[in-house]
Length: 541
Picture 1 (cartoon, rainbow, N blue to C red):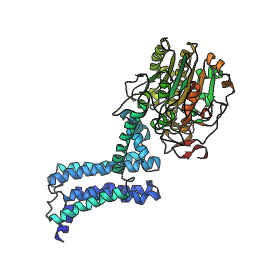
Picture 2 (cartoon, rainbow, N blue to C red):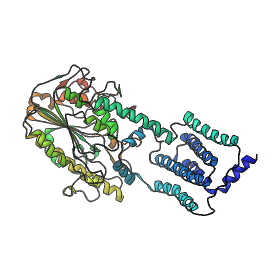
Picture 3 (cartoon, rainbow, N blue to C red):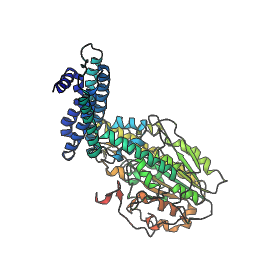
Picture 4 (cartoon, one colour):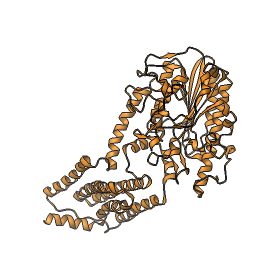
């Protein structure tokens, strides 16, 4: 009994040890208002076990200096994950999941700063202030002669063993029953899975060819094709799709030359998860085919010289998934060297494109252009000469200052994107060859269209995030040999997950497993369920 009294007395004497329970109390109290009722008890239990484990370890330690440092670090650890848990629930209404962690792992520091600048709210700042205030008191105690001096524990080895056993029981309970609720545990496990998945992707998709493609047929004639991959561009802000501002004046001038598809969605609203499906053989029926192959590998195997021109940074700590897929191209060029906090303009890609088009030594070319597009931060995606929209848009649902400013910047970025696409078309037109340009965006952004929010995430998953542009331009030579294009129905419901079949058909490539009914431009096209986030039927959402 005296041993337990010693523990209690030591704990009460050291006020800073009691601070270890503050993050737990915050989760209990604030979580009552933020965490959905069906998740609340599990979240409290999971966080309580983690707090207990750290508290028991700190109580076990003898030297006051070690206790002081361990308690401080333990508080920082618990406070950080309490803040992450509560702010994520506040922002999205759900717990942080492995899919969210995958996106976080793929996000570089520049995109993280965009997140912080656009997603923090008053509640988030309040939570941050609440968890930070005790740190000031603890730091003050470190420099005080009496404020932080826990008495050495005078307990037997048996009771010390019980303390450690209690901590281990807490850790085991987390492992057994609360894997998903415990963010540190889930992060470690998901990070390991993520690295394995990235290595598998590099082994399968970063090489020039793939065993996924067999019996390949391709016409041996001069051909020049361009596939433009947009970024964060929603058709909700495009004049071509009925938006109330003239954000596509140059494309509208040649609208009769374009096929503008009116009902196209992306399977995901994050670049990594979207392009992983759009550019590969993944399908609604088989989301992770083995072996898998990309349209770049298919083009290589069909005898094309392929080019990957990107205006997005290729690497952070690890390569991003789009970079891995693009690295299969014969030639790679990454134009952007600055981070996203700086101004990056897609016109940087045009000289490289012109150089490739003028190279007469290569007769079969497919050029993939990955734009920075309308990526956050919108105001840094267009030069001053495209600063056109400055006043409040009359059709804007939310008329507060931030909504007006962000909408204007996004629309200016869309206007500049229109200019880039027209310049690409004109460069291709000058070749007077057998050619096409296809353009789609990986996903869209919500820019105060349906809710008071800017950006994209699958937890909100609004229509502007999923509904993206898909349009085509064809040269006269191409149209003469494919005269059925004029009969294409433009309002076909289509998901970009089937783009490899459209790409193959347009590029006159056939392979084992090719399905013309998945080509949105083919007369045999068959509408299919449009699945988003792997399981949800978009048209029943």
